[in-house]
Image (cartoon, rainbow, N blue to C red; front, side, top):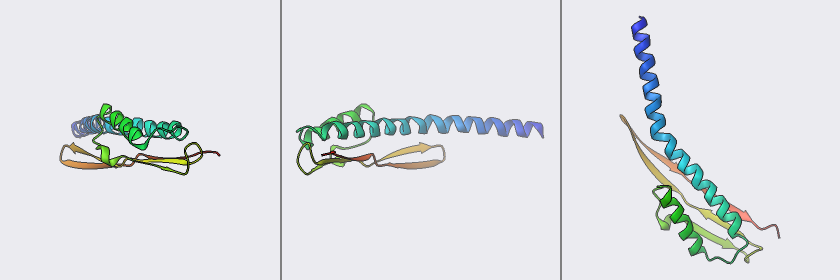
Length: 118
């Protein structure tokens, strides 16, 4: 009986390590990209930088983080006038993770909308 518990315990630990090794990097990259999106929206609300340039910057950052995101998936839009309006960014994407015996699609939607206080 003690041997069965030991084997079961070892399998649980190994399974947890494998699951963590597959999922933690994906979630961490998403966390970093969400932070970049929010920072970009906060800073670019008050500039005259065109939406296409903001989109290019976000695409480059996504490529650095190895996020499977195309440039067309990044939606950047301004509302109102520059400096007194708002800027919204939305970049939904899906990451496919092949877990042993269980393929998984993780859906992420980093998005933000920054309003000017004026």
